Structures are given as C-alpha cells and as structure tokens.
Image (cartoon, rainbow, N blue to C red):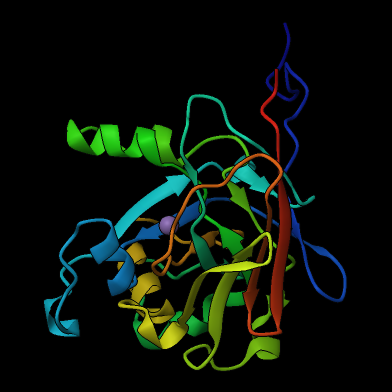
Length: 241
Ligand code: MN
C-alpha cells in the first residue's frame, strides 16, 4: 500500500519576492487593508473617520500568495472592463507573531522589510459585489493582482511616516501621499490583524492606497515608488486570447 509520504501531483511553485542585496522572500499569505487613507475612503464613497478615536475597525481582505508578480509584466485580467491601480506600501514579516494578540509596541520586531506594490482591482466586479452585499473576492483576489517590487530590509528604510508613496502611469502622476496620512500605521495594523489571524514569517501586508485610483489599459507602464528607496516598474500586457 502506498504511504502518504509523497505528493500525488507536482508541487506548486513557492511564490518568492527578490530582496535587495540578494536572496528571496518566500510568500505565505497576502493580507490587504482597505480604506486606510481618508482621501481614498472618500473617493470610494465611504465616510472617513474624523480622528483616530473614530476610526472603528480596519477593513481586511486577502489575496492568494501566487497573485504576486515579480517579473514586471501583468497580464490584463479576464472578466473586467475596469482594472484599477492602487499603489501601496507592502510590509514583509520575517518572524512569527507570538500566540495571542500582538502588542503594537512589539509589532516592529516582526517586520523583515518593505516593498511597494499594486493592489490591482477589478473595480467593476468589486462595485457590483458591494452593491449586492456580496464578498469582494472576485474583484481583488485574481491572477497577477499583486505586482510587487524588490523588498528592502527595514533598517534600510528607516522611519516610514515622512516618506512619500507615489505612482506614475506612462510618466503621469496618478497617486501620491505621505505615509503619515495612514489611518492605521504598521504597528496598528499588525496588532489588529493578530486579533483575527496567526501572523507568520512570509506574510505580506498591503497597507492600503491613497486617493487617485483609476483605470489601467494594456500597454500602460506603471512606476510605483517610496521616495527613492523602493520602486516597482511594471507593464500591463494584453489579455490572454
Ligand atoms: Mn487596496
């Protein structure tokens, strides 16, 4: 009788993100934060909190680990006429969280480093799901929906708050914000996620996008940056026939 010590199909590839200076970061899960910049919450028709005390609960959703794109080519996805860019800071966890709720003061010790990414969104499908009170998954969690640039170690980036996140499409500025505009900063988000999930080394967190989300077309070239310390370049390729 066969044992259970062998895979019965070829093992799926492990998604990995290149790291500045060498090596790769194996991806376990991708968490995403919705409505984390007030200007974007308002442009999506949501009410932005007036202060930290009024911010309530963060909005979380996930993408599959193999949604990442690291070779700079995003294939325009099926099923949509309205693919949107959302430029985001990405946090990469290098250590497992301890059992229980993570103290925000201890959160930084889990962080390996940072990258910039795009939370690509099939906005038409997301809007239709929202209107019916259905889950957003088909609008957010699809193939090639998480292009990401090279990661850099946290020590190379330093303090996040004064840094500026931006996105150009075909050299025109589409989105730009300082990270001090985040409603929930990195320790806040890791603390809140730990109430709901076991955070582990290999997890990525897309931190949410500022205002200016808009449509992408095949042929577009995107350049996302955090100042001059992080960069993602990617091109939108035509849909598969
Ligand atoms: Mn987003």
